[in-house]
Image 1 (cartoon, one colour):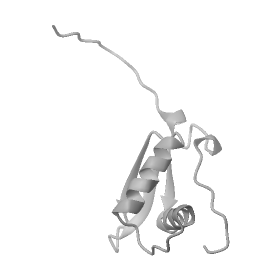
Image 2 (tube, helix red, strand yellow; image 1 turned 60 degrees about the horizontal axis):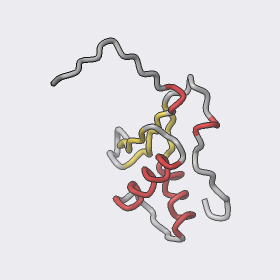
Image 3 (cartoon, helix red, strand yellow; image 1 turned 90 degrees about the horizontal axis):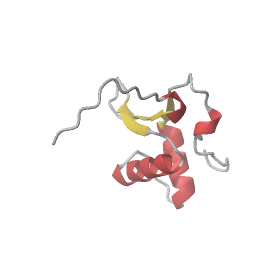
Image 4 (cartoon, helix red, strand yellow; image 1 turned 30 degrees about the vertical axis):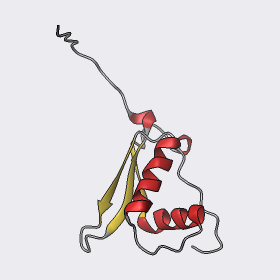
Length: 96
């Protein structure tokens, strides 16, 4: 996506009902190249590390890279929206 300024996904842009969103591989690669000035063509370890760190910094609860079902290459990254996370405590056990 040369020439087009990409915006990293922001949690505020998604409603609580959108618990999980997918950032496709081409966007992950474009965001990484834009931020680093590199020209990577595939998702690699350093790119994943950068994306996860940036996603956490932007408030995403969790992010997980997933393979595409047919090619098994990276399909992109699934992001968990913090607005959709609800914690319920049924029992607290304190051990001594």
